[in-house]
Image (tube, rainbow, N blue to C red; front, top):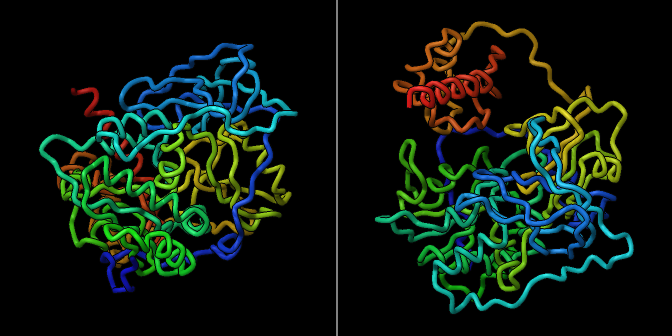
Length: 446
């Protein structure tokens, strides 16, 4: 069922150019398998997975190759049928060397998923559903990569009445979720039903921005026979996809400072995450691939590609073709995505997009000037913080007041303040450094 568009939104925010024209109308295509896949054992928040295979061992596509390292952890599954060549270190997206499983796919194999069995979700208890979700290895596919089963384990004394499916995808350039909503709407609705069952919610709402009418139509048709699930279009604004903003826009509920959505009876899941739950859970299969938007002026064949986890980034870029004048590669969108420091990394579960920019595409802000107290950052901040004052305190290294008096830890680094600052002050970078120092000091004093 579809709830007609209303002016549901949050206060503040910004309207950067969307730049989605390159890929929003392109159907999902499959990327070929690389000659070698590198599956990092730590590609989610929490404890790394533990390898359960050895060098020289043959595996089939979908077979578990690493077990969860604890409750806040997920297993890994073979993205292809092939042979384990080694278990060694590999660089992650931050340039750190972490343990990984190296897999050589069989070139002549059909690469059908050969592992799995039917599973009756309908008659499973909530705890069994949560365990089944952990077994799939599904994490937040919107970029956070937080283990999904942990979010399903509702804290004692808390009840969830609403599950929100987050399909806003407000970051410029990215269209991964858009295409998943258009092409896999039934999986999303099925995943929503599973999640609602696990947390005991009575209603599910899929929220997405009104610049995706084809996705609205697809989801509406998929949910037509589900009276407890509705689709709600929202005004296009950044950062509409942040869970605090989305909860406020849809339900007019404010998640408290330092709090979680569960404190206001809500659980929020990315639509791609829901789609994977809906697809994998009934067959007891694991997460072995994901859809990624590869885009930007520096890409010759932009598109939305489904590809095996562990695919080397260099192989991906070679396949789509990139301009010789490439200056920056960003993982995710330009507002919050990190700039890649090295190409020697594999695809992980949390990568939503690969944005390739040339030198002429990058805006150089130039000289940084003193704050002129214009208030633009205050008007833009969706968390209603005072970025101007926080920036001044950061430059003075007054970190305790930033946290205690000006609520720095509520900042989720969306970049609105830096985007609108006429003085070119790198506010987000200052806040990121300050938060790191505050966390380090707290850890030392604990």
